[in-house]
Image (cartoon, rainbow, N blue to C red; front, side, top):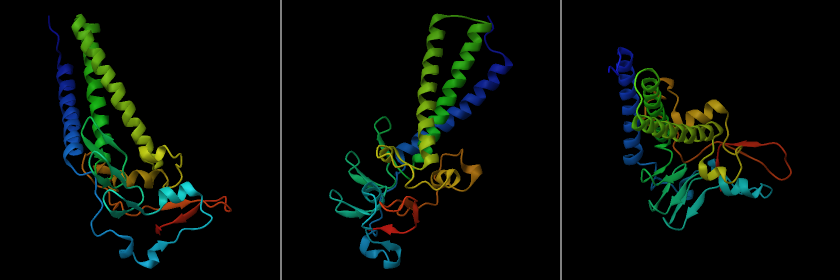
Length: 240
């Protein structure tokens, strides 16, 4: 019985391209540093003109997330959005979470590759599920083939679903850790600017799993809110 057609071979070629991109993205996430704080970074080295002292009327959670902190484990100052990972034993710039599956932190330098890994893995699994389903419907049925189709479909749903969550977080400009604080407005600079902070300015390079972001990770524009002022106040300086 003939199972494959010329259309099948085109689908297989597309699958290999998409799956190859997912594997490249995965390797980048595993082996590329998520972004560490430079040894030169310190409150003392920041010019006074780039500092804002603790406003007395600022809402506490805006100050806690927006200020420069100090890591008692690394014994050094750390910028806002950087957090210490106990497994990696270091502070990560724009820390999102530690991925146990890939055994690396997801931070400023590999968040784009992580999202693309989820997207390409989900799409390649979806292609497999669709192709197997077409074969079952049109030409050939076997229970073990149906089983593999279900497995690919589940992988696709999980990968694309998780990737969608991370994509939404990038568009709203908050990390998985910041999401727990429920302050989506703090670093929000609009959909376009939020996306560029992670994926870079070059639109043609967005699908490629390489770091194209021009953000240093040391200072992000913020919108803070005070107790007396109902409107957000835009600041582009270090909050001390």
